[in-house]
Length: 446
Image 1 (cartoon, rainbow, N blue to C red):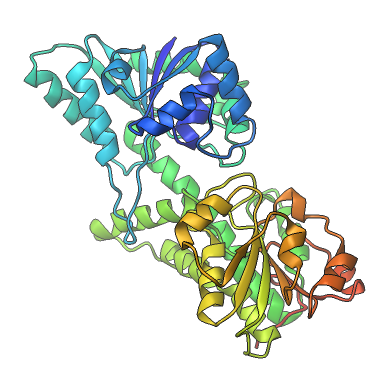
Image 2 (image 1 turned 45 degrees about the vertical axis):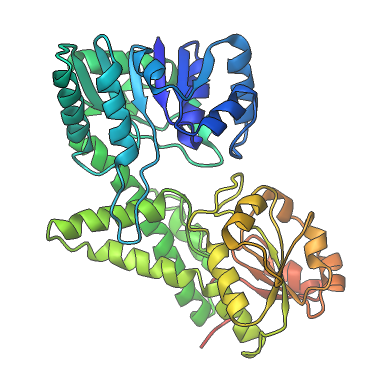
């Protein structure tokens, strides 16, 4: 097929590259002309494992092209995907201006029938708004083309977007138009091994809510485990043992049960806020999601609380080595990252930090700016030099098996604050390092 994909973020770009790999003729458009220019030259605007090689392969084969021309993209293809950013403000109000701008462009330029697919995460009813914009633009120029609007929410995870695109857990199609359903079913056929279980066809509003409900459930599991970690820490239990115990229950399962420094990123926090905001607007109160948000906000300060406890309240003038900045490994995304909360609290308390992240330091520097109480380090070892203690915030593979003896000999007052429960407390303490985990029963705050 010929596909037009509006949006070259991590979802749009990953989806475009995977569709090109599957043999489709893909034109990927973005309003950021500099991003498009870089992509045309094979330069990646983001860190996503496996994506750079896939984009290069698509470009070389001629199946993947990039453009900043909305008209050209609107004229291309059998199916046009809207995969643009839908940011939400602090209250959860979702900004749909980019979605509607694409819809207007398609309505203004499209010269034949088409299927338009809303893939961006957007509130329930957005597809109807897109349909209304398209209908209005077509009528203004007297066009009679038939443009069906479907919903196909994305479930790609940053850091594994290529794999998730190639091997989806499920494909949700929200549509009533038989032709649109048939076209999307054909498109996804090579990626779905069991259509009876993996291909879910439903109405558009249910498809839109499915995306929000999925992320809300994941956020709920994380915040629940972080609360259980607090119980474990006070009770002298080990949350890692508890996680294994409940994760082995088939009704619960092991995924998203890791206690840690809180969740961040472009999806969970934004989507929970957006879902709660939409419910508030309709006069509903989502008590569970309000608690999930509050628990996550509090959890992001947990490492700082542990450090304050360790230093008996006097953290001023201490130097903290910080490993990891991105909200999760294998990405450079700093949106809602727990590291930002830790940095701000350390600086407010008068501490200095020495940080290393394999991918996210440029984005982090752009957010916090240049300041004298932070040193950006080229290696994990550099971050340790002259530091009092070490905090692990993001569990990149490079941080998982460090030389604890070297850490012990380098830090002034050897202590590790393990924000992701990666390390074995016994092994750390055997090296002469104080260990503070999340709910590990060894570092109790009373």
